[in-house]
Image 1 (spheres, one colour):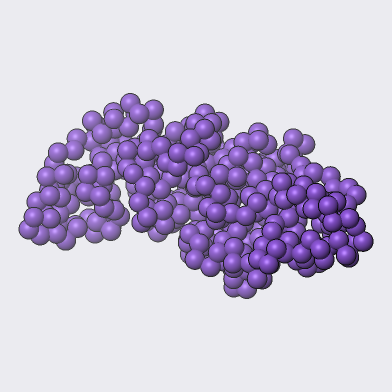
Image 2 (cartoon, one colour):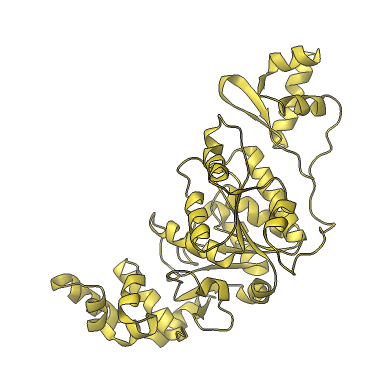
Length: 370
């Protein structure tokens, strides 16, 4: 299905003005192009509106000029990649309710790679634990070093770590936004957002100034999975938004992998449930390679950042914690070590993202990379 850039831009502006999604209306009208050409009256009919609501929809549509909307997008430093365009990813076009267009920055950096290389989504919790953050960053770096394009949502936590890891490895990464590309959300990731616009790509389906809203992020997740050959969930609680991405991936026939966590950790409950339901276990980039047969994989890149080399007491403490979570005094007793030295080793491991303090002052270990 082919959509003209000005039609896609116009529909994005109309959706912004009305504050509603137009996907169902497009299905009713016979496609986004048909919906645009139906004008205000056709839009109100496709939305099944009457009275004042119908009048509002007609007025919103009739006030928008497609060519002018397209110029506005381009003046913001963005471009419109409509359905049917050679640069529109073929995998994304196959999903249910694909976006009418991607409104993007930096698309030239990634368009060819999305068609030729393995594409892996790395997603997870916003309030991620330090070990999970470190693992996500390292995993993304390893995947990028093997030739993959890393996709995520530019949210705080796991998403940001995945994008940063891919960039640090000299790889490509794509952020899919749950708001407009000019909305500046989230502010904490502004520097990362600017770097991705220059070295990777930032995209979404919304009018550039569209603000974030809770319902837009689940809709965004279908694009994250739709762009990808597989989805890796690094850390997710039982009701995490990352699980929505996993559900979309399963509906779209994409493999889902999950990083296992301690059974008593609420932060890992979602990942553990995915594994119980049949998701593949992910402990390294090699697990992803095994799940995604693709000719674009390459040997691990030499520039991928590695983890610290553990020696002496930090290594002994980490090895002990890999067996079971323990309190500091229990560690000191088991290793017959000085309590102050054990405290210093735990502080080092925590700073490196290799140990996490949980309930009851117990510590547990995160896996080292490699």
